[in-house]
Image 1 (cartoon, rainbow, N blue to C red):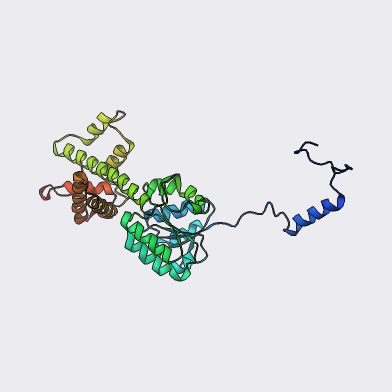
Image 2: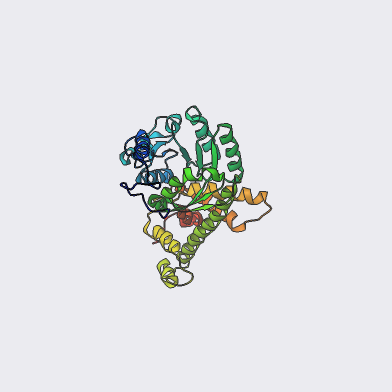
Amino acid sequence: MPPNTPADPGATGAGAAAPDATAAANTTRSAAGPDAAARPAPTLRVAVLGTGIMGSAMARSLLRAGLDVHAWNRTRARAVPLAADGATVAETAADAVRGADVVLTMLVDGPSVAAALAAAAPGLRPGQVLLQSSTVGPDAAVELSRVAADLGLVHLDAPVSGTREPAERGALTVLVSGPSTVRPTVEPVLDAIGRRTVWIDEEPGSASRLKLVLNTWVITMVNNIAECLELAEGLGVDPRTFLDTVKGGPLDSVYLQDKSAAVLSGDLTPAFALSTALKDARLILDAAGSSGVRLDLLAASADRFARAEAAGHGGEDMIATYYGGRTPENGTDGPA
């Protein structure tokens, strides 16, 4: 009989399975429980610590993927809306992480992540995976890997590239460095929140270094857009004429059109808040200084963000850097 040919239940002879042996095999399968092979795997439980613009969007992507999400935010009111989407909103960070397979942190900076982990410590257990997705910079990423090790956690440095809209669609790019042994555990989470995952290496901080390079590109680009719009207005050129002139050509981009439209319409609902962009710019400048690199454009962008924040635009989208170039005599109104 060919190796892959099923035995004839009625066959006899040396190649046939004895009735008793077949019964024994069936008995063995039954001992595992009815329909054991079809039994679904336990649902992965994910604790999300930090439910701001990005954290809440990522939590909803996890819920759409069928994962069990327990959410916590220092200001609980920001996490409560997730209950309507199916999340369990925890009273404390320790409650959120208790029983979780993966702990995802999406907070403003390294100290905030460290504080959240300290608050969560009573509910943590050795072996849980910490998917640290906040933008904290490489030095803080290395320090958080030590904090995680002290708590018995497996640390993945996993910042994300993207803003609110791709986060809401589960279309972020996730940058990951850390132990590849936990890759099977975290892949359902990564697949839910991102369209692409870039695995870099196993060194803590590698993903955060790449994230700073990506954010340098974004920060200088958004300030470039703001300056072009401002110069057009200052010279009496309709900004829309500028946008129409480059549209469809090599100098055009979706980002240019979308961010310009936000300024021209006055809708500065944050996809990425200006204050957070300023924090990231300062992280980049610190890292560049430690590496002997001078970033003139980035430094000017940070100054511009700071002026816009001082003028009251910190909670708006980062394209509100437009207002960082307004002179006092010209006021802070947007383009006509």
